[in-house]
Length: 389
Image: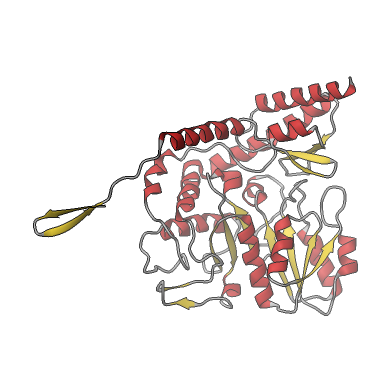
């Protein structure tokens, strides 16, 4: 640190640190490796088509969205007003009135799921959490952390909850808490909320909390004609959506929305920050908020709808190309997840495929184009041919 006297005042001038040439080389090598990996990215629901150059200048600011996004805190280097705009966009998409919801920007789907189930537990401390065996692994972890009693429901071949098994496992005398899936992890299956409503009514269960894990499909379904209504017109209490999945972001992020009345139970005033905080993380990434805000503003409803239509077109294209070449391939309705037989380890590694037992899947995200699918199908055929030989 250098101290320089100037007009009888002391001015502090910080030396700018520099990387060594060796470390700079490592960084450059990492960048090239990640760029190459991005060209063969088919197995996970992340949009690799990113354009965030306008936001580079914000990386040198200590942006921290601490506390309730609707209450200004003492920490002024924040993007809370932009966060509220993002939340308003999703609230409108999910059909809940301005006076009826609360939410915040999360660091991804797991935090959003945890928040929804945290509210469920606080509302019904003696409730039982029900979720299907093909639910995202984060729900098992969250249930353990929150010390919630659980019942795991079997699934049918499509990946959807087996409602007959649910009927057999429901405990009528206890509040029923649910994590429902708007797209299961491996097969993209969507829970049937009207069917669940009928079951609960038949069993006479009135104390119910429904959280919906809509990490990927939460933003896609509203733009599909005839798709299931996974929004607050259904008896849903909270919904979690990932931001880095469909819209795309350079870091995991997302939002959680819930009915405002559910949040009052956990609301606390924190003198240290001069605000309320009913979030899980407290300090939150304010930069990812800008990424989501910019995507929403750039694309708008018409642009997002085109992206959804592209994903569905590529899904059908992938199924056709695979089946034409003798491979098993299928997708659930309103899903961009194509289930295939588990290929070789080499292909799994190259194309970064998620696997479970004897299956793998392709997720046709906005960055996927026909040449990528063609190349994968070609390599899959060559691999199976070499096995036969």
